[in-house]
Length: 92
Image (cartoon, rainbow, N blue to C red; front, side, top):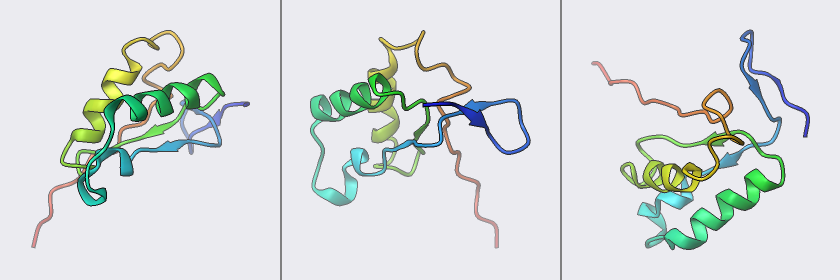
């Protein structure tokens, strides 16, 4: 899968990414960590270099699982290709 520029930046991402909201498990009755890690590994092995996670996905559980999954893939999935979306504080 050919990477593309992310917006007007020099960051290269794949046009297809893996969303990890459900991996957080909060609204889905839990999650199987081993199966989630296997899913992330399969996505990377098939050329996906964009992983979407955020602190609100399972109150950080998704980020923990993504971190564990990426531990063995540092050379394959570099920080510029693994995007973490940060939540902004709400002001009224």
